[in-house]
Amino acid sequence: MRTLLRAIVVFAISCVLSKSFALAKSSSQRDALLERSAASGVGIAEVTVLRTKRSSTGAANATLQSLGAAGALPASAYWANAQRQTGHGVAFDSGRWHLLLSDDGRAGKLNHDEGVSDCAELGEKRSDVEMASIGEAFVLEKLQSVVQLAVGEQIVFNGAKHQYRRSASLDGRVNRLEYCGSTVEFGRRVAGLAIVGPGSKVRIDLDFRGSVTGFVFDWPQYVETGVKQAVLNLGDINARAPQSEISASGNWSVVARMECGLFDPGYKRRIAGGPIQSACVYHMRHRKVDSTGQNTESASIHVVPAGVTLIKDPSWRYLQALCTHGAVCLDQ
Image 1 (cartoon, rainbow, N blue to C red):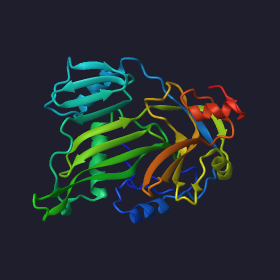
Image 2: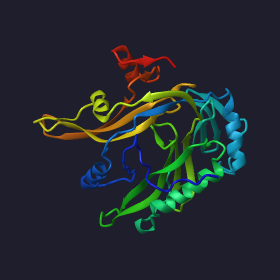
Image 3: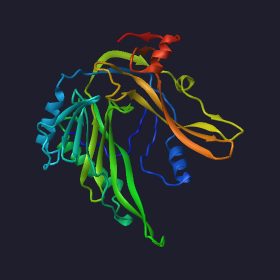
Image 4: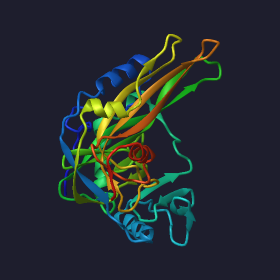
């Protein structure tokens, strides 16, 4: 069985991009993370376009059975005769446990009504390496039926997010920060290229003790199309992307970081048999100052096609717009 890579994932079409999912509390910490995750360049000449493998309908029940057999689901939960159809797949309810599976069985989410209940002293917080190791073991042992790897594919550790709770006494004299748990995320590389976007992700929720309290996976199977797609240089990719703007009034929009690779939009937008082609994801930060001087910060994500010639994809509005306005586009 392949071993997961214990390293912060390098998102690239050739370039070094670092990424941290750890929550940063101060603006200086956030700025430092953003500075370290700035793209240094894009240089690969072409990629091989992939497509998602079509799955049989009604595969959700087979996935439920395989997850249960592997011990990925709570032993106390009883899932039989508890399913209902939703807009995004099939839901299974067992007491306060809930499992949602896509119709093709390639994506799912397990969660509990209570969410985070217990927390611990901040000093008991586990390291990212320890949490990643626990998450890795769960993926390899319990989710192996859904997180499958083809030849040339790797799972990589993307990083961790941590949950905290601040508590105070009634008189306000005691104010302490507690550690409640972590979510570790894993992604996928195909032939060395990162899959960017919501697809090909696995997240494991852990409480402060390191016990698994839930998970999310979106893990389709890919096949090569044999189509080679030439990739634009960084300047031409940036020309398609939203631009940084800074005004005298204090309003600004800046590119915080970018990640490039093969784009998978995730199961809610992914088309069965649809193309997985080159793209860069731009993470933008915005600040708007109103008439009273108060400022509001926000963030947005923009996915920019990176191919010289694009493969038409009805699920990708911006790509389709480029095709309409002069970009060279091919049918699937």
